[in-house]
Image (cartoon, rainbow, N blue to C red; front, side):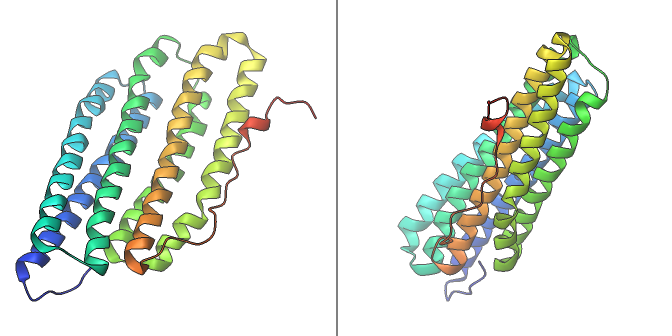
Length: 236
């Protein structure tokens, strides 16, 4: 968060952390985008690229940890400066996990290729991923411009992710009940959907971390939750 210090090198170090977070965010978004493209268009080559690209986020997270520890030791920061550094560490963890989600989705491309079904099977997953990525891009933009209003909006819209996950879960469950031949492909798509739902959770985690960095406190209210998949198939 922009604060000018007497020691300009301190500003450069903090800006470097923010820049690395932005790079991680861009990379994580691209990984998820391409993993969904690989699934929807049966692109095994692209899936392999996504899996290989995960190492960038692993290394970036380690570098942020190392640089943050050095800054704390060297500058002994307080208040918002310390929160910004701790926030960068926490956000890098969430972004690394989002990359893992993208990699997990990409890994299922080869299996789904062997049990390929009609395009409608993949439309729901594609739309769900678009919603989660919209949330992720919004929180990354809000972090970059220190917008508390946009951060809170991301957190409040987390229930949209849960609601759409429940809807997609129900749709895929219906496909499986209609024809046992759909069970394998739908099972793998359900795993993909769960990974996307987790991406939404990580986006909300980032929003809460940024709220803490800006204000010094975490949001007081429990985030809304609307994942009703545990109810599906249960008797009344």
